[in-house]
Image (tube, rainbow, N blue to C red; front, side, top):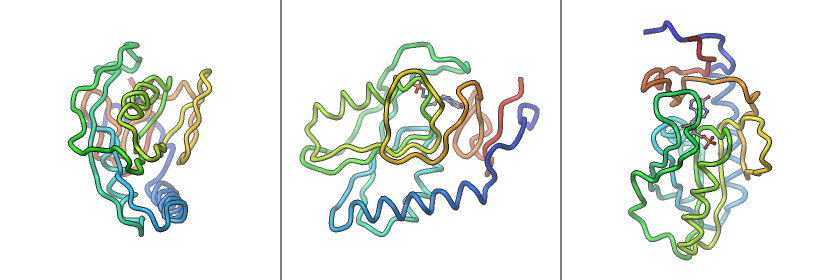
Length: 173
Ligand code: IMP
């Protein structure tokens, strides 16, 4: 079960401390407002659970599943929405919570789809941001990662495994 776990890049303590800081920053920025957090399935659920418990503003939840990866470690270049929102987001403040950004394709596509529904505002909170050539900026970023690293743990999987690890490690294959 642990055959693919390489180097630990981010320990549980470091992740939780950064998530606490992000929660504080988001709570401060949205003070007096109500938000809907849109969690991108499946990888962001662990991050979402910790982030939510570090917010002290009213936050409702919705989920969307959008995929550009199969079981491989490289993008197929295709982005598909496999499960849509159940909430009407028109006029609402939306915060997208995502685990990791690689090419940025998944989030650019999601941005297009959600902006068409006319939210009052749309921001992105990304736990891990890989260095990339495309210039896409996010409002809240947990950690920057080198582009060549494929990582697992804390919600992130390789072929459906390792999401339950409390830390983030490199994948060894
Ligand atoms: P993008 O569209 O190229 O930005 O890819 C983002 C998606 O690819 C994320 O939502 C993840 O599902 C997946 N992904 C990218 N890099 C990694 C990684 O290092 N580990 C696990 N999943 C990854």
